[in-house]
Image 1: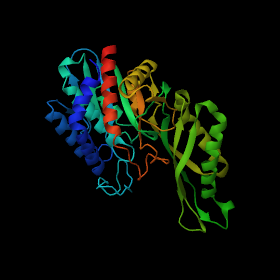
Image 2: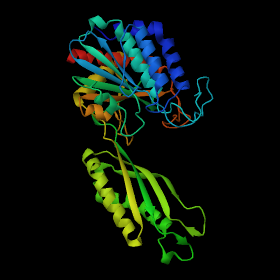
Image 3: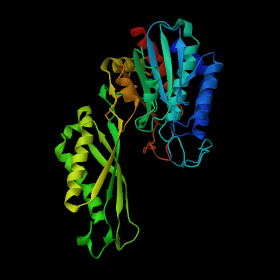
Image 4: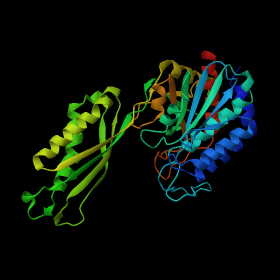
Amino acid sequence: MKPATVSDPWLGEHEDELVRIRRDLHMHPELGNQEHRTTAVLVERLSAAGLAPKVLSRGTGLVCDVGTGQGPVVVLRADIDALPLQDEKLVPYRSTVPGLCHACGHDVHTTAVLGAGLALARVADQLGGTVRLVFQPAEEQMPGGALDVIGDGWMDGVASAFGLHCDPALEVGRVGLKSGAITAAADALTVTLTGPGGHTSRPHNTVDLVHVLATVATGLPDALSRLVDPRAGLCLVWGHISAGVASNAIPRSGVLKGTLRVLDKGAWHDAPQMVQRLVDGLVAPYGAHATLDYQRGVPPVVNDQSATTLFAAAVRGELGATAAVPTLQSLGGEDFAWYLDHVPGSMARLGVKPPGQERPHDLHQGTFDVDETALPIAVRVLVAVALAALAAG
């Protein structure tokens, strides 16, 4: 069976519906583990196609099997949560929820997997196995909603897993692929410092807490850069620092918050103990008390070579020889990594930039948007890779 015989007829009838669904999701964003409306919309559409979606035990997110129930099981994964950002676009489908928007393309991912599942449902009795549609919650929250899917047992017996992620730097019609690590590990950390406080005229009589905060803020990234192999690509960046309220009062407490990202899995495992040791050493000379809250995030997404080769062939077969392009490893984190700790698979990058646009709308910004002609392309690619994976067993 050629993939085009599955996706093209369905797309010919439903391409406009893809745009409507994507825009509806975009207008009604929901944060991780709060995606009740999104879950209900997906359950209703899948049920209308005669399928039997099952909501995750947490109450949001769902899975839905398409096929005969025999043979290999291949996962197509989408993430359904939004971000706590204000939608800054002046478009008819702008977010209707103040302070929330789909600024990472999860509405596109969800629509694409839904479309692929509905296209495959038309030939479910002809599939040589089962395609499992996974619509997971809370990708934007550490350590990620993928663990809920795994915890509910939906990765048991799966042969392989595939996903697409929007790439605003890649033109629509192109798909970026890479064997090996394609994203980084990402952790969150909070350093809280406390001291007795005092007057700024007498810093020698107390703990100059703001100075110690600054020492940690600059000294910790510097020390890590000298103690970790540069090839590991470890990068610590602070996103928040706060202390005190008055210019002439040394505060009693202060906080640093940031993210630690690293390309190498071994360095990721060693990072918490190293950070703790360095923080203690940096504050010790000043007498401040430091508390480190180190929140484990996600490991790197490490694409299986065979699965990536299969993915690239599916892209070329559907979109042409030049559509599959190499892509680089990024420092972004992605909880698709947890699936690939259990089964081989691959995540690819879907081009969503309009042709000729010089400056892309970056991810995690209120201005982020996509060229919606990427939607049917994503459906075609996902159908093709699912069928190829089933054929490969």
